[in-house]
Image (cartoon, rainbow, N blue to C red; front, side, top):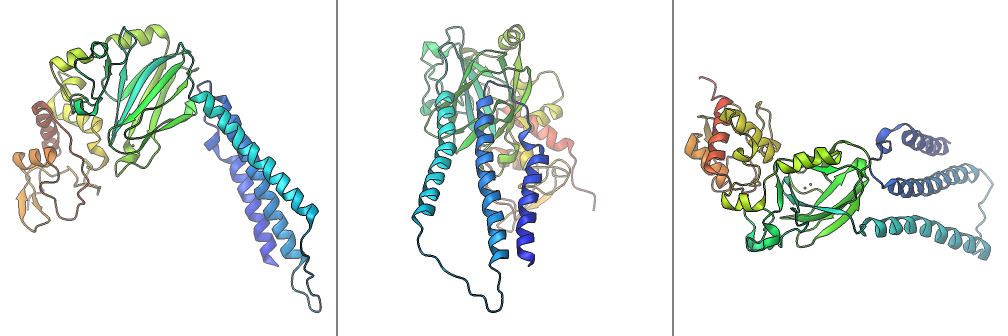
Length: 377
Ligand code: CUA
C-alpha cells in the first residue's frame, strides 16, 4: 500500500514548494496589484482542486484495494452527483476566467492623460521611442526601416521630426504617471515583460499591441523577453528606470531626436552613439554587448552558439566546405557584415544580419584583436 502514501507526499511536497518558493514574492512596483490578486485566486482554485483530487485518489486506492473474497460493486449514473459536478465545475471555471478578463480589459484601456512610449523588439535587442514636445509619435512604415531607422519613421512626417530615440538599452519613465506602452516587432514574436510591473504583452510582427501602467516605485527594473525568439532569447534584456519627474526631464534632454539622427545617420546602438573618447577596444566591447553579439560569441574561449572570439584573430579557421581561412581583418569584416557568406565548420547558419558603420567595424575588430591570437605552435 505504498501508492496512497506516494500521492499524499506529492500533495504535501507541492504545497510546501509553493509556500516556501520566492517566485511569487517579487514586490509589485506598479498599480497592477489586481494581477497578483487574479493570479492568487487562480492558484487557490487550482490548488484546492489539485489537493482534493489527489487525496480522494489516495483514499480510493486504499479503500478499494484488492482483498480476497471482496468484489467491488459498480454504480451506474447518479443524477445528484452529476448535478454537483456540473455546478461546481461551472462556478470554478467562471471564477478562473472572469477576473482575468476584467483585469485584461482594464490593462488595455489607458487613462486619457497617459504618456506614451514605444518599444520595438528585434533579435535580440530593444529599441525605445518617445514622442517629442508635440506629444505625437511620427508615422511609421516598414519600407523606411533600416539599421539607422529601426522604427521605420516616415522622414516626411512633421510629427516624427522631434521623436526621441533612446540610445542604449535603457528607457527612463517618470514616477507616478500613467504610461501607455506600444509594442511592435521587427522580425519574430517577442514579449515585453517587467516582473515588478506585473505587466507583459506579446510583440507580434505586423501588429501594434499595447498596455498601460503607473509605476509606483522608483528604481531600475529589468526588462526581459518572454517569448522564445531564437538562440539569443535569454540575452534579450534591457532596463526601465523609474525616477522623479525632474530627473526624468534631465535624462530626456540628453536623448537624440529623429531629425538629428536622420541628418547624420548612425545605426542605433552604434559606437558613436554609445561613447566617445574611450579606446576602440573598449568601444567594441560595449558595442558587442549592445548588439547582442556576446550572446553567441564568448570572450573567454568557452563554447557558444558561434566561435569564441578569444584567440580568434589570425587563427586558421576550417570552413564547412573543408577549406581553411585565416581570420584576418578582411575575413572578420565579411563575417560580421555578411554572416552567411561563409560558415565555420560545425556552426549553424543562425547569425542575423545587422548593419554596422565603418567606425563600428573598426571598434569590433579592435576588440576581437585585443582578445589575442592563436597560441604559438
Ligand atoms: Cu525576444 Cu525572446
